[in-house]
Length: 365
Image (cartoon, rainbow, N blue to C red; front, side, top):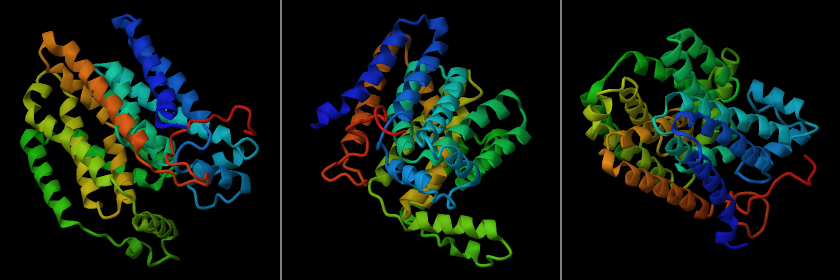
């Protein structure tokens, strides 16, 4: 199958969402989130051998080799042993459902947010590959919007993080969102943080996580977490630094236009800080790309809310053109990610983990 043939299904998904948005009245754009939730959940949840970890998860569920996973995911694996595809369908429903809720509640341009979610690095496509980390990232963003911005309840947000810990232990990094919510560091603070991030990135720090688990008997849970972090640290992947530069660009744009962006909106300043913190964490662990992605993911997720705000400061007479440019750029970003050879499964001759796209329909679920 050629690249063009392989990516058609992804372009069709984007086109369907685009068309539905255009035929939906402006005052009912929230319905586009519902449509996207149904379409993307079926697309991801019914896929077969799409994503780095699909076959590994499916094999673990069928063989019962699930003890290395966190409690909630382990229990879900036990429940879905006779029909493993339900594991993927439920997880993707959580990822996409929580993200679409946040988009519907907070986005100033629903269509752009959905395109960002589908196309931008470390979002929907990456969620097809790293399911548990994607669940935690989406839950963290949802928890921030719902528990902190809507309910003003930090204890409820902490509860969300604790639940996330039993899905993926990297969720604990989401606790950094609490001081971000309560402390406004402003444009200067974000600039200082960005400069510090650039210095950290140039230092190429290397962290040894083994020290966390030295006293295994006294701190079993911490030791297990240290072992998991150490395994991530040993994995080498390419292109991570290039992807994180996309988030650096968002931080730079946010800082340059900080005053305009925050003039009439109390949320966007925090989103700029969150993206900058994510870039800082990714830079700190840049020598361990997988570990960097795990720690930055809950912060990177906020790009689906931030990017549409950039369009809100564009002059009205050019806003439609600027919006279309962003949609095209997002599509090109998706095509780039689909083009990169990154398959690590068992199928000889296959180059991409995302295409050819196949469904579980007709197979043993």
